[in-house]
Image 1 (cartoon, rainbow, N blue to C red):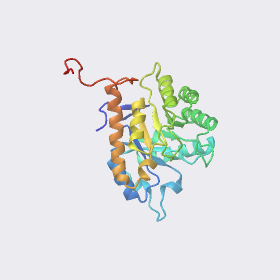
Image 2 (image 1 turned 90 degrees about the vertical axis):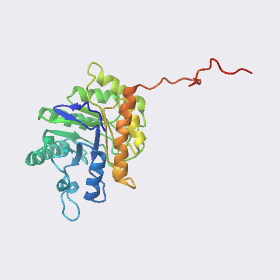
Image 3 (image 1 turned 60 degrees about the vertical axis):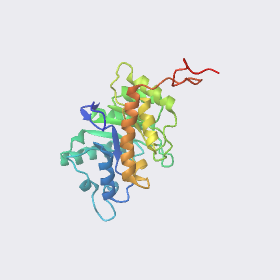
Image 4 (image 1 turned 180 degrees about the horizontal axis):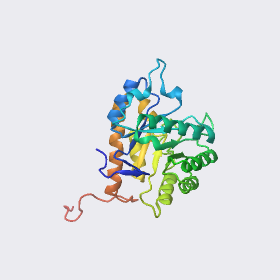
Length: 271
């Protein structure tokens, strides 16, 4: 199972380092099965009404046990700061009504355009400052730009969430060097500051790489929901987070240009 050491984000303590989204599943029943297989504690929910109610009028919240999951409302689909702020406030009101522990936090997304779904850095920073002033614990989606990541932390983000690659692309961690720089920069003097790789991972190996780089967690949706067998993939992603975390803590061997024999060469039979 996941590390016994909790991940602290603001006032929250998370036991599972795999964060899972709730969109794109064929049915709510399948979503519920996949979330259980992932053994996640935090699930993200887009709070816009059209994403919470299916074609038959069923509400996604009826399939999420509030005693089992901390709901993380997100501002997915927002393309300016104003819409993101309004959506975050609606999410807070909704979860306060449900009595869920996640009412005071939000995953902030302000996107630049509908084709790339890349984050808008100006709109993101603007919305972040307003939400922090309004008392939110903000987990902030961003690109893998180290300078932007630093500015978001300085502006009060409880967690910076750099993208591995574009949302839903399944390309994995395209620029591990930038992720390393973000980790080094944001954790300098603050080693427990939480950094979660968000978006673009498609396979368990992508998740393991993110964790081996030093990420504190991984958030994904399409990699599970879009798989041929979402439930099995969810289980695989769960194990990948654990594997990457344990591998990082164990300490890998250094890379070398030439071979190093596993068995001693002394005492071998000569010609």
